[in-house]
Length: 480
Image 1 (tube, rainbow, N blue to C red):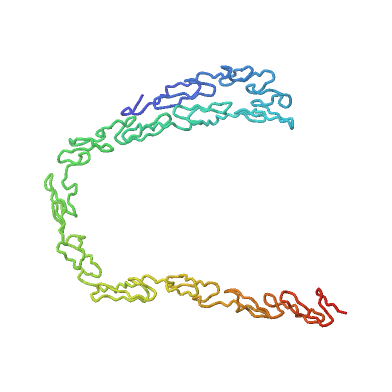
Image 2: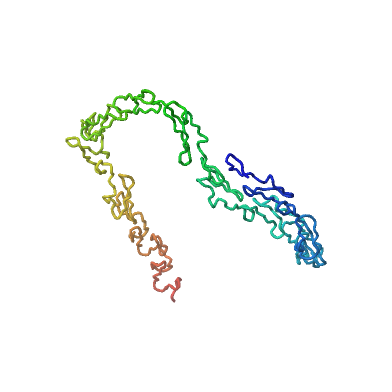
């Protein structure tokens, strides 16, 4: 069933659907289904669910029907649990403390732990958890399940664990004439471009129904995209709906600020300003045809009877008849540079200072180009005109021209400083002295009791004993 001007809008049938224990939900543009409450099923949610059917609810024992969707089990001797699936044993589990779960004994402390079924919690599994509140099923019905906690029964057009994924109903591109398909639950809707209608935008709307042509004008549908219509007016009428009497000057046919004057019912005359002619003042009277610009100047006409000469350098003047000295514009940019023009002032030459080069003396010369650093020093450019020398070891000075003497400030107390490398120096000690600075002399205080001390230059000494004495193990001994 449809409604609308061209019967393009489907009527929702849910107002005619009766759900005894549920709510109606539209599944497409023409159909409706019932979302049943827990414990009921059927097309109209009028069939109660009996878990005891087919003896599949209780694993063992007797199943007792309580209400739609609910039941309990009367277990035989030696078994317990919601579905009589737990075998009783002596000890902490013998009293069947777990209401909706399996009892597990902890031998070390003679205690128990309840492993609860899906949907229950608490020490004795006595607290019921309704996993369907709030319902996780986006487009479907949530049903409690002992194994998985809950199961979503999806409506037609939805899929996924939580019925959150819509099946693409626009994949077949059902909308015609560049209509836009909008995804819905097991349905779609076409948003049509102007000029089209229908469920699939397949109907071309007559554009003349919304365009009224006056004064015996005729409406014509145009094959444009999107479709449009246009009024073909009778002579002496104009306008979108042929609503205005035709005026020859209404369209402003005169160009270049020409003045339009009506001449009868259907003709006009243009009064053209100076510099223009023609039926619509569209023809310009060109002043530049006389070639007023000299020396290669380019002529342009920004207004009637007026021209401007664009002169090439170095010419100037109204007709480019004058020549200017090129050096007056100071083209030579470098400091201390000098500009010299040719005799006819058509060109110039720049004489540059020592630090610059190029046609306009604007390019600085690299200060390191002359390799000013001596003794393998590295030249570093610090600006466009300055440099600095990075000297190797053993040299210094602005150009690394000075050799560094490492022995200059090397003080040997009892000896002579000798250069051993570019940056190193050692002391050559006098007789009987040693140490880095020749500061040590073991014989300075004459440790020999009877005799002379002689240094061995290896941090030791020897005593030159007189007759009758000798030096044994560092001790003087009298010879008898």
